[in-house]
Image (cartoon, rainbow, N blue to C red):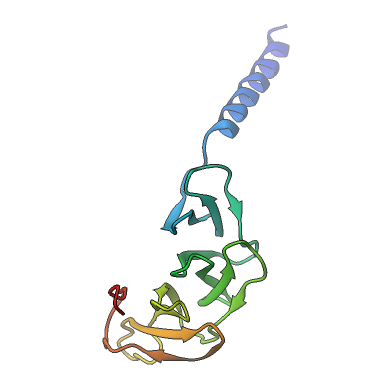
Length: 166
């Protein structure tokens, strides 16, 4: 009789623990960025978006690779992010309402999104491309149409933002 009660009791404890865990709020929401109306963040290797007022989060990306570093465009209509494709980071953009992401960089170096130009026509990213042998980070800008990125004036910088007047 006691042997029969142990498995049933253990099953009850496991079920109760699982139910309590499922009801807990999500944790490890990382790298948030805030627009006038929404919050974008990384969670579980994907980019998510939720209204600033609260509510249910909606996943914007769904890939086998890991995404992070979400940054809203100045008008809040797009999100640039770092996608870990082919073993390194590259710059992607997606509409804040969802849709097909567009890849902007294709370099084998690790490109990590840092922000946007004030006019919203370029994405700023940090990378160690062209800094061998030291491997320090420099900032670049790439247009939304893609093409060759242009280095920004500081020879070494990890992150930066434009002043309101550009």
